[in-house]
Length: 416
Image 1 (cartoon, helix red, strand yellow):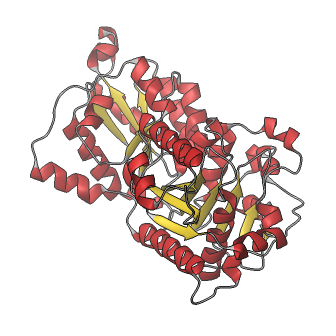
Image 2 (cartoon, one colour):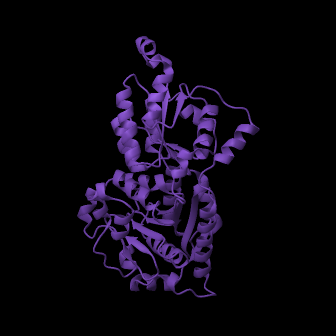
Image 3 (cartoon, one colour):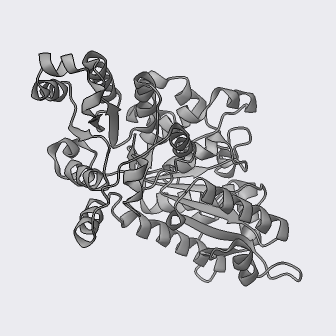
């Protein structure tokens, strides 16, 4: 699988691996992938049962079976024709079949085929854009940015923006919005079998801007009940419910943040222009390189920028990070006052404010990004016609699969 993917640069496919069929169902439930690739074994009864379970927990997923002739004992082929075996699989809900070893050409054709077949027409008319604000150092205004970006988006898209506070032990979003929620992300975790669009909306608290907030737990001790798998399920449901999902994160690169990045269409790395923070942001970008989070889905935001003697300038920051500074929001006492009062500054725009201009440019960037197509079937097809196909076998060791599972940062298209 991984070898075939290497021949599709820029395809935006991320692999989540499961070592057993039962585990595959749980991963599918949490990640809600476009494609679930199951290994065909002589035990067709088990394969059909798992395919049925996958379709039950994520009906929008296309179930594909990978097979190789030598996996079946000779007496199986003699007693049952190959055609009958495949027909049996189709009746069980398997959408397509791939022969091992996988080639780049076969994989490309599968992606294009699934995009154009009626099976994919059951997908939702839209898939919300997910934005994550991340930092591995506190005090840089990450939560302030998350709240104000979500608030401004909600002004433009009322009732279609969700802010999720995944800073589970010290969530500040509710305070910054002057809200006292009776429910939180913990309630979603405690009702996994009931979690759907309706329940998700009921667990949020409405802000006057039109924003919905899914708050962090009121008591930090409850954070221990929330793991990355449940965060993944919540985010999967959220992006099917709202046009924009904005996520505030804890300033620590842990499994929760990994799950958030797994779903983030764009990650905004937030820092201020202070030397220790710049060095911290450099290390965070290096971590994102290590997990193969796509460079094109990262943006660097210098928040609270101040031209103070001894502080690095924007050129200095870019040299240290080896990354462009994409957005700058200057230091403004009004932002601090707004946070203290629980009144986002996005609600009171000032025409000549540099802070307002920086926020507006950031929001425009979000909306431009959201307007782009999330699925690249046409690009894949063009790639196939323009260049020669790489038909080398796909070799995937357990080590490589584990590496992909650990580093899965969801770009446009998910596959299991």
